[in-house]
Image (cartoon, rainbow, N blue to C red; front, side, top):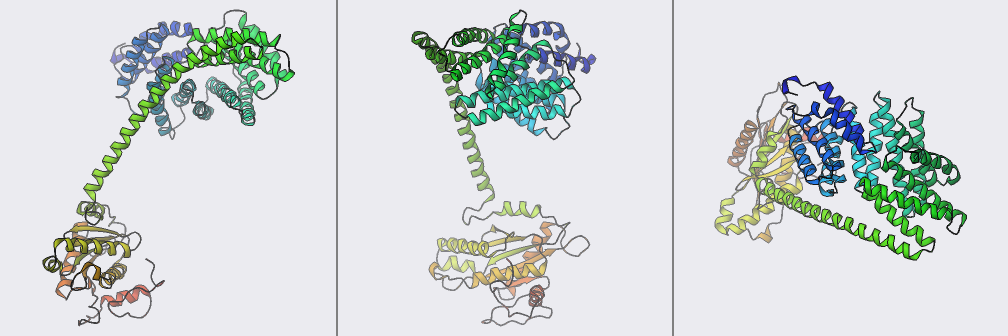
Length: 588
């Protein structure tokens, strides 16, 4: 098919047929289906469909036993996916590739693909429910089961049911309900093995309810799907303790499967479920192990062979373990040792693969953490002043650039240490650094919640006051000025107490006079700082005027002084210049 003649509907039909065949218990169904539709998928020139063509090629190669060809096809599919948009279609492709990889025993690659598919499926979950989305959950659930992550597999199956329920296709709803029933039964078996009998019964109950809901849908499944649901429901009833009710339907479906034509894996699945039921009957009725025990062992042997032939190593290991347990219960010590040794050998190989996987993941995680730490260090160096620990000029410019001056009143204050050059000259630069650290600490400590302090350059600091008018800004800055002036500076061995001068500028919402950009706002505050310095230092100055020096200095209070603004904010009488806050008077 040439790129100019792509029939999307035809491609989608081919894709759904191949996915359904991939889910079939008989691998021959997939091979036959691929032979019919391979031509439709190849040579489209579209990266997403090229990815599907490579994914199905990988599946076919794996069925033929060509592991290297399968790995190469998966790599081709992943490369094509890099050029696809992050949609539910891409999540589905990743989930399917994860299933292919886990079937090839490449657990590390499968796990990474499953993680990517899960994250993407969650990311696109806000979109309208779609068939690709619920199929992504379907294949994720299958892949996670084979990775022994059964809790996560159940969660994905449940999400798939929710998505499918919002869609009109009854066949898809039936398949997801059947899968949900199977995954709950699988998890119930696992928790029963751990001795969690109450939770086992709860999970088995959910499995039965899902199976019942599937049967109530007006949909006719294939014979194989119907037989699988019968096995799952009977198994769930067994786990729920309904042994006598589960035995007849399970024997009936086993006879039907044994009559010929059924897929080997499905026959093995039914054998395993029936063997477990017979083992429970032996334990309940305190039978000496025969005839139910002998039949259970025969079924487990047959099931282990079926799973080994189908490449289901996980259930193959389960059969080996249960064969060892069943033969030991019958007193067949030699046979029990044989099966348990086979289980140990198989499990050791699986554990070695898992250890290699988790070791690699640990290394990757450690490298990621180190990269994150290095990024944080670089970010801190880029935006933090190393002397004071405050944000630096770059950080201040970035913050002021984010101010929403078009929506609310904002204020900026520029703070300068009075006579700082004399501190350096009379003592040393080390003394100067100590003074700057102390000033920074006082500014940060006495700032209001929400206000931000930055070191601009040298002995100059900037305070950003979001959502703050001029009167409030002056009140807040007078608090900082007073905190610095009243601090104990004796420990730093400076000849006179350190003070600061502060210039304040405010930008109002649109329609009001004043600065319209953060640079104009900063320049205005810097100009008022210059005015405060020329007026005698150790004071706050704004557009409306300035607060005069403390009582030990003399200054003429101008008309309409900033002190009147303070009184207006506090809602009370005028305060003396240089006042400090009393507890509880003004919220900080």
